Amino acid sequence: MTTTTTIVTGGDRRARRSARRVEPIYYLFLLPSLVLFTLAITVPGVVGIFFSFTDSIGIGEWSFNGLTNYIALFSDPAILQSYLFTFGFSLVTVIVVNVIAFLLAVGLTARIRMKTGLRAIFVIPMVVSGIIIAYVFNFLFSNSVPAAGTALGIPWLQTSLLANPDFAWVAIVIVTAWQAVPGALLIYIAGLLAVPGDIYEAADLDGAGKVQQLFRITVPLVAGYVVINVILGFKGFLNAYDIIVGLTNGGPGTATRSIAMTIIAGFNGGDYAYQMANATIFFVVTILVSLLQLSITRGRNAL
Image (cartoon, rainbow, N blue to C red; front, side, top):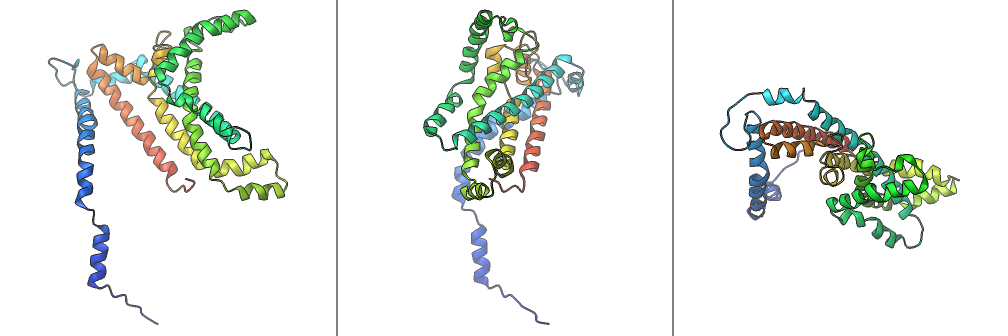
């Protein structure tokens, strides 16, 4: 039996230590961002969590009330309705956005004319403010669409979708998807362009049709991009606020009031501590979604 001994010299040890050593100048550049993040995000968050255990209205005197706010949250129908709407809306919207964005990406990476110009056109909604988009679509849903429904004799289009408590969420999904599709589209285009063309050439030689190539080659090879878009989209839609404010302002009634709207409305209405408890629960939910993202994407090498 042969024994191999590795001798590590002092020079090798010093080289390894220097390779691991971080220059102090990097910490100096990091310090301003760290201070700003702490003062703007961390400190207000900790203070808010602290006041969620009190009866504070945002100003004046306050006293501790323990878990009273948290217990009340789980029996408040308005809070439960906002969570139900937000998660349902997020789930439907993320499906609609990813299906449309993926199909558009497939079309815009095919051998078609003017695809560069078409890509530029399709990403325009991404650079427009959400509140502006919401007000424009509010006018369309309240005036243009009912007028078109009356002219065409379609009864269910003759009244605004925004005034219907059963279908107002559909309008919100349409407008949100219209703005969110470009971001997902760019990610899918990057994923599709990363797929080697030789694979499709080999599939053509084997007699595989375009549909077979789509489901057996394209979809599996861009699965990592699908996961990223789904997770990022879902996290983003959980924070929906500006488009809903511009379209329905949470109405009719409270049918389309999201979690973010409920929290902000409580702050403005003197219900500070109660809504801080709601915000804390919402923060925990987003952390769980982030952990889910890490667990799903860990080990994937598609990107």
